[in-house]
Image 1 (cartoon, rainbow, N blue to C red):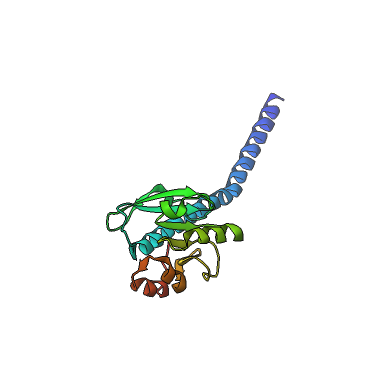
Image 2 (image 1 turned 30 degrees about the horizontal axis):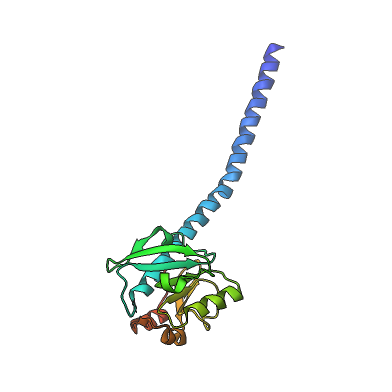
Length: 191
């Protein structure tokens, strides 16, 4: 009798172990997916950083700053790598900081702005504050690149590209090397 109870208990233990193993196997692909998407998000952030630094390297301000001040405005998706701080290929450091869209000193404290998702009012207020100031603007949000921003990023799973708003470039006071126009037409950067 004791043998039968012991065997039944042992069998139940094996069934539980088998069930637990199956649950772990079933959950394994599910738990692996966030890691893959995190990795893809990190790749996109690195690719965006590379494109932004490339754009900044083609820009010339009336008074070249020793340290480039890049301000991130509004909620963004791809600035995780950029906000860590970085240095341009020329060796010039890039100081990155986040500001609200209505910050009164954006035009005086930023050489470039990276614009995330803003309301229409925030966006128009921001661009109104930049009129007549040499501030380079890069937009991350899905806008048509027709109002305000000098550069508009196009980020997908496979690449990062950008468009150039020539009218905004002409009015910005920031000179952009003509090669950047060819870069906007070339194949995008792949993460």
